[in-house]
Image (cartoon, rainbow, N blue to C red; front, side, top):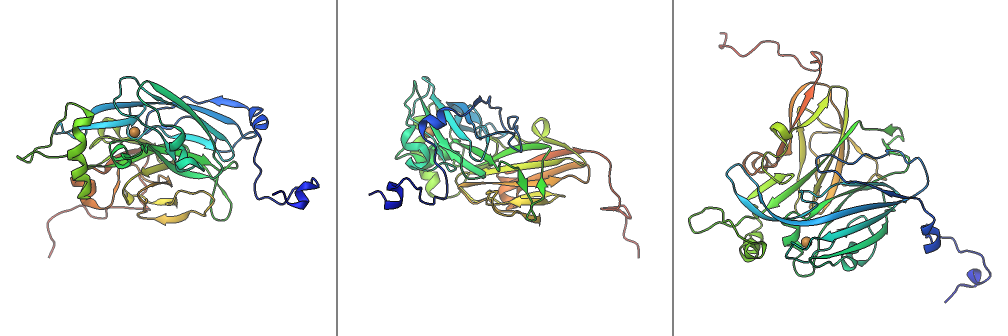
Length: 357
Ligand SMILES: [Cu+2]
């Protein structure tokens, strides 16, 4: 039924404007080349023009990965060969146009569910691809924030997610990030961290099993998953992935944005020796960020973001502050910060020595 006011050509008040296909066709198109985590592709923090269609391409790759220093393996499933998948960045009002490729060498069907998208199970219903197929999905990124994306094939959702198929889409407000008073917040560097709870089966001798194929790993893995006790919890695909050569880098005075995604299980990020200056722990930029957080909380099935400006040099640890999950199971990384020490913020008045009576 058409309302009488509409019939006379007067438009009823609507909260948002939906574009017609010819109007969308007129939008500027840009193609973005994705980069591997923890890096994030180059992007504008404040949109310089009108909404655009931003084209991305991701290839699904199933592969066996070594996930700790003891040589334990995971029959992994990935977007673009990495855990997490690459972070995609657009501005609110842009359209994401993703081409998803399921390589012919893969064994499983896959798809993608974007938490930022509206309809069709996040796009999952419209992106089912068998090995050797590709598909293209467009959706309007109309809500600002950090949002999880993940594979969600019917009947196998948790397995594909815990085997590695998730990442973040960051939708920036068109006028950039803001503090609760509306002052602009900007970052110099952005890093993306994906935390993965892994469920590697053990044999009768208590040794982690190594599987020849992805399919072979399925039954045992589901058994471990059902106990809800991960064997490992890792940042970016491996115990120690963000330490040593892989450590994140920064300088005193530099502001970093740390994006943290966890598609399946809660986590509580903490920067040892630092803070969250401004944190959107639920990850949605239209809400005011919280200030001065020691530890924040990322709900399983979401991505959050934290800003921090470094004030002291040194090696920081960034971790899940259930410390067993961090130090025993693997959910910890390092940030190496260069610069000058500030004695006003902290000073060792007397070095450790024998007790003085
Ligand atoms: Cu999948």
